[in-house]
Length: 226
Image (tube, rainbow, N blue to C red; front, side, top):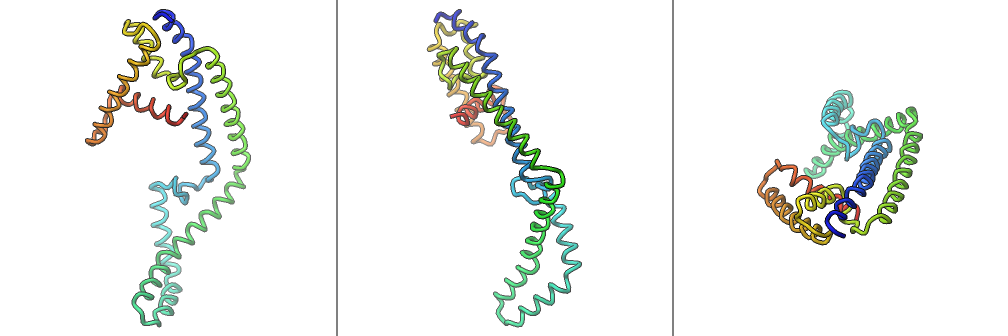
């Protein structure tokens, strides 16, 4: 194809590519929502992947209350185990009674409460609704991809809005006369930008320009879809 034909072709398929990316973003949102619903309303207080500062406050308050209320019983148990005159056993007993047991009771209590809240708030129904929406989004994605593959011969690897915008720029500025030249230019530019990005990351740089961020995001999209 000539450069004008390539340009018009890219401009024609770009809206469809954007729809596919929007559908993928919707899927990611639904997957995250599904996981949150499956973990329950109290996930921030017990689930490893959702723990936050609220958990730290709650566990400290809980341990204080637990040791205040059950201190006499814990000390009695500790004295019972301390009759064995072995330092290691005494240390292990103290660690289990004062640390492990309260934490185990905490997680058991929160998990039980979480299960009750999930039933009371009908979380199973919400999870089912989200799973249906996720299934529908995946079906739409497959249909859009099939439509796109019928409309273009550009490799799927480059069918991202970031890459197509680059191709469009190359043709508008007459830096490429064919799709093959545009792809080669894109690969050279992408490699250069990613090398700089990784170099800055290695040196502890945390703030990047949009060019670096978009290049890294493109690589992330490609790796996740492959």
